Every structure is written in structure tokens, then in C-alpha cells.
Image (cartoon, rainbow, N blue to C red; front, top):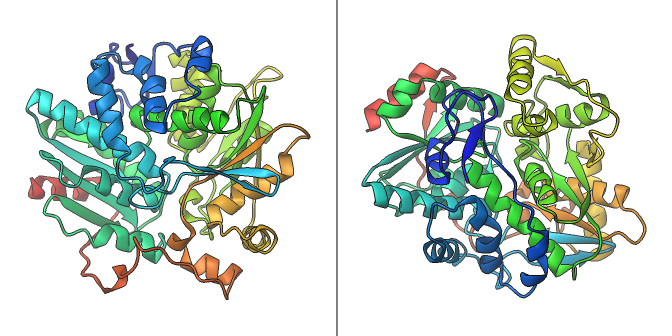
Length: 455
């Protein structure tokens, strides 16, 4: 399997090269040359554990790693998860909630970032090289990325986050890690500013090569690939229905894009329900075909406080029939005008339904889910559940992805359910630990200077 850029400006590369490249050197995103149809294999995978299924689903995309080596790497990726099923499926009312928060940092990002950490270590060991990871986070990616590479030799990690715009718990999960190879950079700006910094620094190819920059954000194909697995897993937990739908809390389009890939691989997903908050650029796009940047609104579901979805370019590439010229033109127009429109034939958006949920609706949903079913959901999961409930069709199973443990969002849970105890042992005592972070202006040259000084 070779990988291409959505903008067509690089020669095809192997899976391992794609993982290490992160963002394509022409500014595009890396995608596989082909998406395998695994329909003939579906019956053979029904009894596999989560890790075994992950190896089976991902192996065709990673054929430059020997299968037994890859299987062992994947097994190690999920050893730190606290639930024996890795991602249990829990019925809550008429919806099935897929809990993706049983990893070391209590967020769905652990599913991919534990795997990516193992991948990085494997490739670096083979090559005898070192890596400087630069990442941006709206909350959960940072701590999950740090957890994924802690203790791994030859890796430094630099995580940018918007000052004051993650939950206090999310920030403490990052800044209480005092390892010498971990650097938390508090950016005076929004998450979109952090993502812009990331892309600008990566676009300096001389700097990227000199300092061996690697990516942990969902611009890295391995992140998306690992997330494809749990769509298959949920289908098997439902006993393989003829069709099922999935509701996905969505900010950067990576999580739901993984579902798009799973569907293209032959998994019988009917609808992908795109659930978002007041930052509704994606919901507006699927309603109108217009992709237009707005002002970032700060919400009770901060991981979705995003106006420019970094993975959206991959989706466009497939909607343009894998044409890098059209994809590049769309992205350039959007960069210039902060607005672009797709002229699409009828039916192009049929795989998706989308809607936005207000903060008031989010808190009400958290309250209702707990009052009716005794289930405590974090605000992002509540957004997904609300739209899962809204768009569910008769006799079609509906899965809602639970992206974080509610204890990570104390303020929102307290507002929605003032009398509910909301704790987790992983987070206990974080507020008493020493923290370390470096305040930075939103300037790519300042970020590069910091990396230089730290190496």
C-alpha cells in the first residue's frame, strides 16, 4: 500500500514513511492509494478481541510491517486500557453508546495515540533516528499524545494548547507531566490558531527535516486508521445487523472521517450523524455545500470549538473522485477567501446527516440521559446522543460514540447535574501536583525558536 497527497505534489510513499511524514510535504494530507474492500473477511472477524480485530482491519494499510510484528505492536497499544473489551458498547435507552474513554487519559484519543506511540518507537528503532513531535490540542489530544510517547526513547513532544480554553482537568493532565522530553506550550489564541501554527511550521520543509518533526494530530493518517477499527467493533457488538447508523461528536472531522473510510471498506453503515456545537461550519456545509469560516464560539463542549476542520480535506479528495487538482483548488480558494463552495451532483452528501446543538440543549441532554437512564455523559457525548436520538430510524440500530469520561468536564457536569458525584481515580489529586507550561505568542517563528532551543 502506497500513500499519496490530497494535493498531488509528492511521490507515493510507504505506510511507515507516511506515519513519519505526518503532514504531506506539499501541504496536503496523506491518503491511501486504494481502500480495500474487506467484505469477504467480515464473517471471519466476528470472534476476535479488540486488539486482534484492530490488527486485522489495519494490516492491509500497513503492509510494509511484517504481520507478526504488527500484531505484537497493536497488542501492546491496548494493554493499558482498563476495560477488558477496550471499548464496551452500552445500551442507553434506544441508543447504544460506544465507550471510547477507557484508555490512560480517559479520552477516545487514546485509541489512536497509544497505537501511534508504538508505531513511532518501532520505526525510530529500525532507523536509529530521533523525532520531535509537534502537536496542537483543543483538550484531549495533548494528554493522550503525551501518554502515548512517555518513556519512549528518542522522542521529544511539544504540545500547543489555547490558554484558558481547555477544561482545567484537561490542562492539568498535560502540564503535570514534568518529564524532560515533554513541553507544553500555552498559546495566546484559539485552537484554530494552534492548528495554523502547526501547519505553518510543518510547511517550512527545511526546518521540518532539520529537526525531524513528526505529527500526532489527526493530520497523521495512522490516527484515522486506528479509529476506523471501532466502527467495525461496534457492528460486531451489535451482532452484525444488516445496517446500523453512527452518531459522532465532530470538530476536526477525523473521528467521523474514520467512519467514512469504514463504510468504503464495506462495513454496512447507513448514516453517519455529524453532531456539533455552535461552531457549525461542518453542519452548514452538509446543509448547503458552502464551507465558510466563522468566529470561534466557546462552548460547554470545547473539543468541538473549531472553525476549520483539519481532516475535511481528505473527505473533499474522495468527493472530488480523488482528484488532487480540484482538491487543491478548493483549499486554496478557502485559504484566500475563508469560503469555498462545492458544486455537487444530487446524492453526494447522502452518507451524512448533520446538525448543531446549543449549550442549553447540551446541558439538558446530560440531565435527561442521567435522569431517565442513570447514565452520566460528558458534554461531547451528550451532543452525539441527542442527535442519535433525533435521527434514529425505526428498526435501525444507532450507535453514539462516547468520546471522554465525564470527570474530565467537571464544570459542565456540575451545571447539568449539581448533586451528582463525578470523579475518576486517574484524575484524583491532579490539582495538587506541580505543573509546568510555557506561555507563547501565536507566532510560528517563536515556536520554531523554542524547538531549536530545546533540542
